[in-house]
Image (cartoon, rainbow, N blue to C red; front, side, top):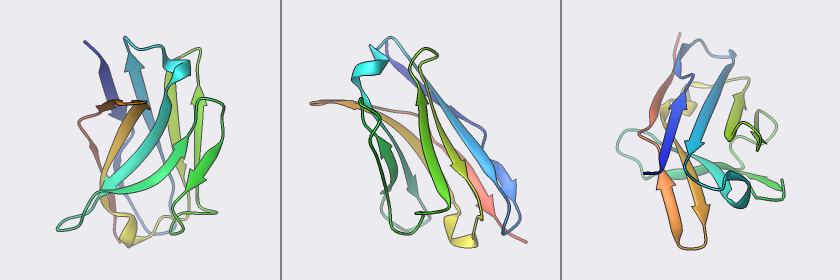
Length: 115
């Protein structure tokens, strides 16, 4: 059974940093596009960042210049470095692995930015 597991969330003050990690198992990781999504209370889930199998990246406008997505194919891990965090970044963050019509989601992890 495929597993996608996030870690590294928590609470931080505005301007602070957090690094999210996502471990994927039982997939040929290097073939998959990996993404981070988030869902704030009473809002729809939105794409934060994606990294393709070839390493190309794309970011939501709201996080460009502050967040960085990276992957380590040998470890089957994807990371989201979040800097200069703002209260509006508060959400549950989800890791996604996608290949064609196959898509797997993690259980989500809370990130709270508050003073």
